Image (cartoon, rainbow over all chains, first blue to last red; front, side, top):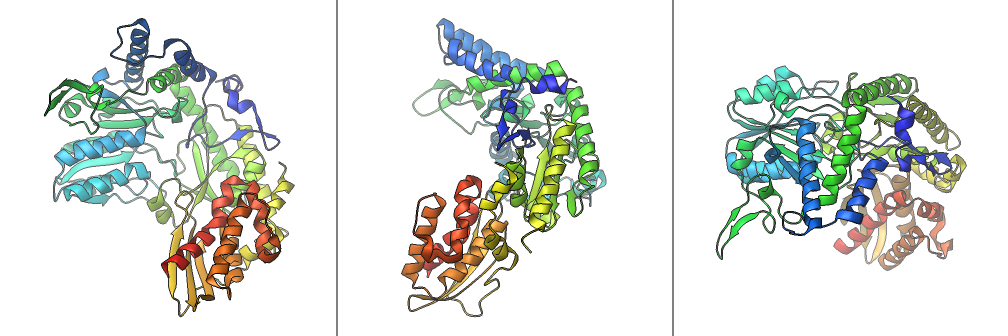
Length: 407
Length: 142
């Protein structure tokens, strides 16, 4: 993989920040966009912009073809059986909320259980808290191992005949843990529970085959995989989606509208009320082309190598705490002793290095780690070992800056 | 921006308040307790005020957060002790203006003036204002 050539395709990465070449280590928050994606979106607006599924005119057909073409591209990307199973929305949060609002409200009752983990992002946690409150179900947490992984024995012990939903992240946005979602799905299905996967940190980095995993729902976001913000995908098995009620009503999603009742369009459109995110879907299709051309396995191998190198190099710093398992996705979460992560991030920013600091939308996990906040460096296909060397140098400067002169 | 420009943010006096916070702890007797946090970054503060006859008799805080948020809380409690509530609120208003980079008469602000540099770091302004927001809320709740 020619990382230098890849990086050149990202205009934003060619700039200096605070007098230093930008080192972008915050791709878990949002990835940068290659010129192909930016142009796909701008070309759509320049030449083809029109509403979809209704225009008789030429532009309407072009926009519809592109939008539905993007759906087919996504289907292929995750190997879904049918485009009926691909629902466009504004991101992972929207997808998980749809499952929690529609599927859970209709299929979970008092005394039932919804199983999640303490490593969930708030977007795969709060929807289930709310669903549990609304239905009288119990929210049950799988325990975590000391290194921040989930043990399948614990899954077997926790999931039972009361379990109706198991909702777990594919990859932890804080620990980098890659969860064995295929095996967990199998256990969930043995107890007739549905398996919901938060794929926000999964799909951008790991080849996803929803038929192989056999999960019932898989949600992810375009903007974390080189696509635009505001576009996301919910995959759901057709037989489940067929029986789910929409949660948003209005234009685009209806079949017949009478004075007192209405009927819905067929899948997937019944879940896409209102003018859809047309440009976003087209940009996402361009992002998928871009990733496919490089090869998802290549990208994962590159990130795995970077993560291993980062772990090795960061461990050489005195007084650094690193969280999460050894085998991990392309991110490292850490704290420097006696330096708050905001201060770390500010000093790094002065060096042109962008990292995330805070609770990473995972407050229960922060509590589990017994920290208020952490700093996180996350990698993608455009990052290099030199970026990590600069991070390490920046952290040494941070330590020096906060260690000296202030005592 | 080079590393030494960070000195406009992390002034010596700020680091002193961060490492040796004034008024950290709890009041035995308080008339108002405010818990406030910064949901986007996780900083949190508990501020206790002892207000009698319109005067801030005492103030203490506890919390967890970055150097800017904790130093600001330390400075704020130091500054408002003994002030009339109205004066404390005026000071808070001045502080907000300072964070917006507006010129203010900083003489009355004492140590707090050291936080002026925060206005050049937009991402950190909410760290500095957390304690002041807690104080405003406490005064209004009282």
